[in-house]
Length: 218
Image (cartoon, rainbow, N blue to C red; front, side):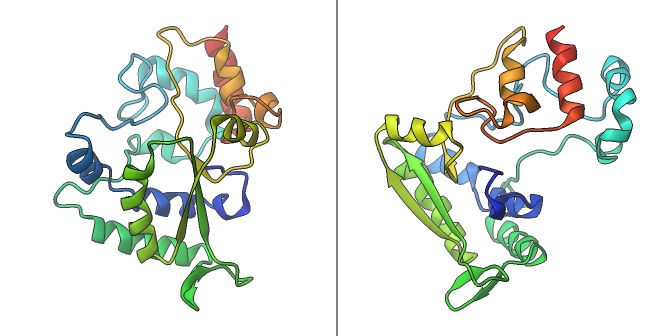
């Protein structure tokens, strides 16, 4: 999700959209359970964050305590929403509805709208092959009053729009590295957040993140 658009800047909105994505059903019904859920950018590696920070990890974070949310130190790493029992998509959508309402989005005139009356529309850019997983996601979003629009285009056009951060939603592979280095500056560094063509697609611009990235690179 492109956090640069006004409608996505509220964390409650992004959380609500995540609640509407039923990974377990899509994986089971459409993909023969061939996928594993990604819990972060460093999934299934030595760099994946688990539980509460401790040891060397806590030592790195401690100097940045004043720049980081308190929950980083006292709450376990959040995991993506699940629909496995006792959870369910229906319960997740109820939570999503409340989050959207708290963020100022209410259902009226056949659509979810903000205070200005603008309808919530989510465009998915795809170069082909994404119709199957995106369809049940759009169906769930429709129950919240959000209209999903599927736009198929050649990758050159999609890349052009990505370069200038002109997108709502798309699918991208973000390969990891067993020894993360300077590529982290391009992906998470503040200097690249407003640089067209950079890999900082979600617009991360945070001094605490910069400090951690520079430490990793060094």
